[in-house]
Length: 415
Image 1 (tube, rainbow, N blue to C red):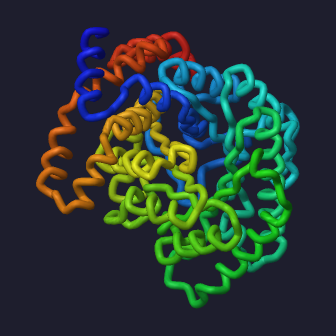
Image 2 (image 1 turned 30 degrees about the horizontal axis):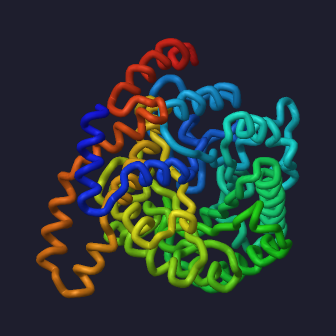
Image 3 (image 1 turned 90 degrees about the horizontal axis):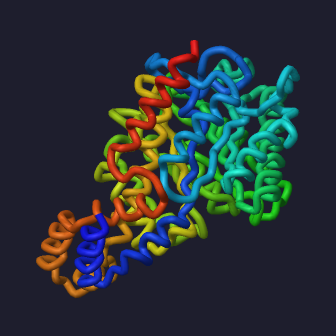
């Protein structure tokens, strides 16, 4: 493998790429790993079935049933994924023991075990208020609800989660991303489109009114084109949140499953970066709709990574994963998606973007097309293997044997 890497190193050097520097830079990029893949978005509230247009399909054995099992599964996944990481939590993953605390009353102490978990492993933590799977979200409206009492509950919940996110940032020394997504919308064509959006705008203004040092907390807002049960109208549309973020100083989060099937997030990233200091991502894989399939090393993932690297925005784009598949080994799903995200970043870093840009700007589209195609067969895999070897994780499918053993030893015992 060393011989193959040395050969690849020379090949990439011939086009001006220092593979050692690329590996070092790649390793410092934090990718936020979503905790909810490990238990099908169940959380620890035991509040019943999922709602808000969210579905986790499949019944593969071994689902994490409590915090201890979820943390153990995360440990196993992290041991097989190279690079720096964060863990992305939802409010429903508060660890309360026998205590039952309403979502609007959650405190930092209810997440203290997660902070300890992160400290011991050098991880960051991100947070999301959970505005679904709750009696007060049963009719499909939360922050845009016409009932002020229901709106008040969700406003207070979001405020509480911002304080918890600030606590994460202070304790860990790594900025926490607090992401607000709501399921609000209507199944059929609404009589009033602007009213719910005005209520959402006012609610968000109140939620974000308390200044929190951005060193500790970054607030993001996430749009969606439609959801199950809200097919005709979504309150938190892309246009709403793009304009809200631009005028309120928060960050717009782009989930690549939350747009029309012919839209691509990769094309949105450079435009957003022209007008925003930061852009946040939830990387997923939609199949026909927002199905949250496990991220694969496909063309759109590679294009997303290319735009991040081309725009010199590794420190400006906040990368998080968001998918959940209950039809396969859940720990393997984490590993497959997270490794593919990092592979895409590596692949993008091994492209001589400045040279290709010069070809485009000079009108030499023949050379641009030829070079773009030739790069596809450059020895990217040998650099990936070297990176994995330096991090002490299997480079190829060797990790799968470890997961099969973990399944036999641990997951199979969960009933």
